[in-house]
Image 1 (spheres, rainbow, N blue to C red):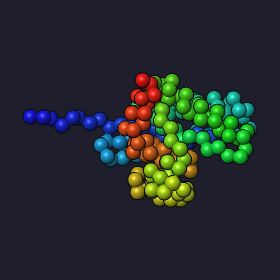
Image 2: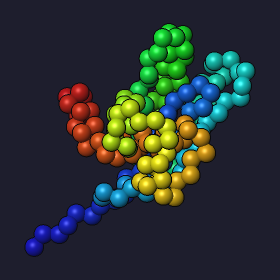
Image 3: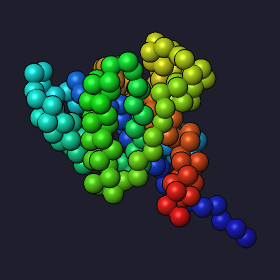
Image 4: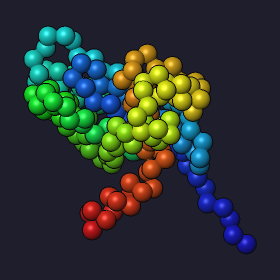
Length: 175
């Protein structure tokens, strides 16, 4: 006689890094069921110097990790645009978004923006409205108050769909 393994829900934090607003979204997966936990954004005060903005992001994400205790994290990869300075600054916010979970001992997966859109909507070039519409279907209790929080939930959902292959890639890289 074999018994079925006991499954435990997995709590995932998705992060959409940004200097003005860093979105975050927490979901739980239990088998193939998704559940909404919380979402929001860290918004440093306007006019702060870059170092102070990064510190505010660090503190805000640290609070989210302490409050919701995810065991896996996913971050959106930086979209490289024509403005090199803006891209570098966004990269610094992304570095903080990856550092904070690492400080908590939580693995961090990365996903390209088109991969997130495709995982949530089925189309790699979906717009924000399409993502929001699918979020309402996939996570009916979610009510993100900003596009950044909605994107963070989409990143968490993407990780929920790809987490097995992400874990395998991490093991191969570490070997």
